[in-house]
Image 1 (spheres, rainbow, N blue to C red):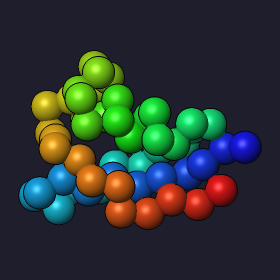
Image 2: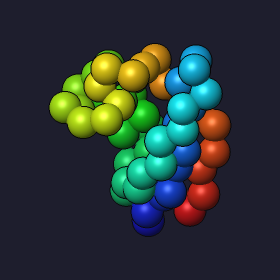
Image 3: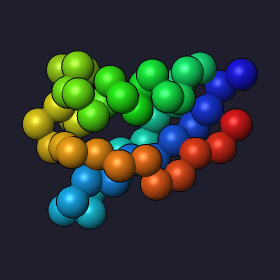
Image 4: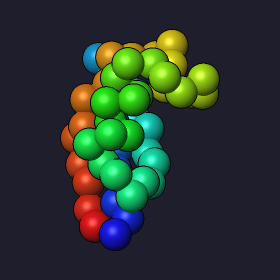
Length: 51
């Protein structure tokens, strides 16, 4: 099962993504483990998800 999700940071910037393990992926974004757009723009909060 795959999820589409949206994260938001304190500045109101939104990030969208997809994954088959939502809890793991959100935690990885929060910890800055991805060397991508989200790494230096956190902290992130999950604001929406859908299966």
